[in-house]
Length: 405
Image (tube, rainbow, N blue to C red; front, side, top):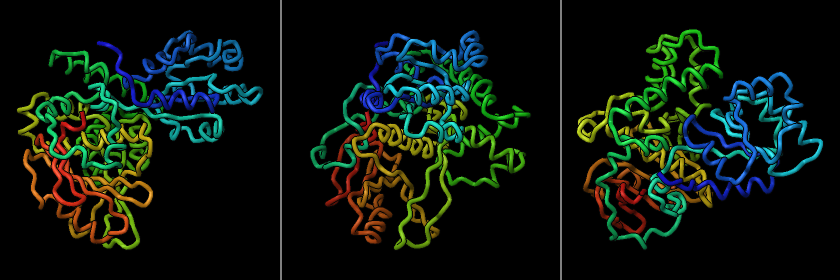
């Protein structure tokens, strides 16, 4: 399989011009090392190597001083205290682009270290392949949705393969595997390795079975309102343990929260966040879905499709020319819109429907929001399972899932 260019590549080169440290952060096996190695940097070390790890831990100052630079330091989250030594090295003589770090945990989990590198570090987050990356398309979905959509109207986009894309997810290694059994083994190994490596390193997990149970419970609630009390009770963990375990899942890019959209003029808003799995391949594995037939029959189908669109929006947002605020809209009287993209003072409302046909009534909650905030409303979109890109009204569009790839 040839190397697939990541949308974030150009941003990495920009960061290197202005920051001494660049951190490529993302889930395990998402392609961070491969991306770093395509920056044409000859010097590379990984803290997964026990000898390198031991040297860096025992004498971090000497380790950093002796490295040929610029250098890629892979799996930097394994030795977070090394960041302090890098900071001290930089402060003696600041040279931009010297250190490229990769990490399977976000710096949000290491607040003191993050604060110490303020002004010295550029951070990019890498996610599994988007459909645009997977099929080597140049467009960024966030930039496209922000712009004029009339040029796409009445064009056709094949949505028939979207189920396979959702079942597989976007992890690079999965794209190389044809066998269903081999995919099952890969996902099983991935989850086990994640829990044994990243999760254990970030939290003092005393009962691994309870962590695994909570992990699964959170994942299969993807697309639902975050109900901490319900999850905590079902997992059988106390409040402190829940907070610790859930933070690990967030910091290692397994779960993301989506905050509600808020404006003062809007009434009866739901204020709790929703939660989403960051890859539908892992989610489907946990749900034992590995075929179109099982996906079609699953009562989780709607949530899986919604999760898939959420992931595509998040991935696109990392490299968009104009990044969007990403929210959901919900009211206590059951008006719901899956996603809100906020571009400054302009709002794009997005609904996701599994249907292969589309009707104007699918936009009813979007029309309602338009009436509530007419001065902010830009356009409404329904993603659906058909093939035709349609204009439903002046600023209302039906977009086939196939448009994403």
